[in-house]
Image (cartoon, rainbow over all chains, first blue to last red):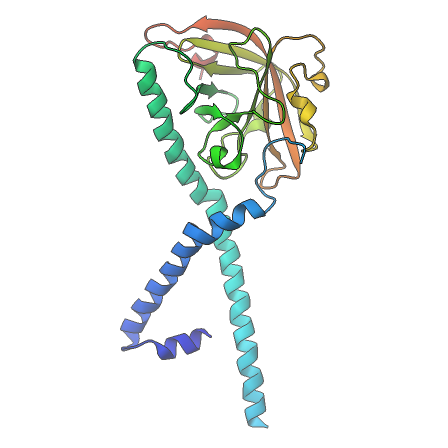
Amino acid sequence: MYGWIWRHLPGNAWVRALIALVLALAVVYGLFQYVFPWAEPLLPFNDVTVDGQ
Amino acid sequence: MARARSRIAGVTSVIGELLITTGLVLALFVVYSLWWTNVLADRDAEEQGERVRDRWAGGPGALDTKDGIGFLHVPAMGSGEILVTRGTDAATLNHGVAGYYLDPIRSALPSDKQGNFTLAAHRDGHGAKFHNIHKIKTGDSIVFETVDTWYVYKVFNDLKETSKYNVDVLQPVPKESGRTKPGRYITLTTCTPVYTSDYRYIVWGELERTEKVDRDRTPPAELRQS
């Protein structure tokens, strides 16, 4: 999978490494900004109130 | 034969990479929950708290619940001041504040002649304002600061573990605390054990006295020791 991505990136090894780094950061950003905030309320780790439900 | 073997190797390596990726994503989620949400929430709470203080600088006025009604100081938790705002839904508490209950049992306000001022805040993440709730002991002070009054409460009981369905802890006279007569109580609720929310942790206090806020906002003696 990662090998496939690496082979399909353009440029020499340095350019590929740079692009790979940018892609990885983009994924982390997407996770922190969108995926985790969406997933968190669905997980039972952080309910602090007492209620009837 | 050789081709079949290399296909198996290929599939295996993709599965392996997916497993490693899942592990990394889960590790990142922990970083997000326990660190990044605190960064965001503390920033929100600080801005919101400053807005409240700015408005207060205009002098005593009517109670305004928009940004917050006051600040909670609990020296035993050692986490500085905690802004208190209206409501306990996740969107509110995620801003790094403590909220007073509207639901299922409406909280009294400290200024009310009697009743139970009931609060909730996060134990971990999103500011983790009640993280150290287990350090509060009987006899410790909880001070609530409003625009014109310091309310000094003394802790008299706690429940280290109770069901999340136990809404009776929020009653105007919380029987489980041992009190049977109407009074001016304060109740802190959060989740327990740390990092999970299987149960709820409850701390009860009772109003000891109030002090008028003077021009310099001199804190009451309980807050000056630390």
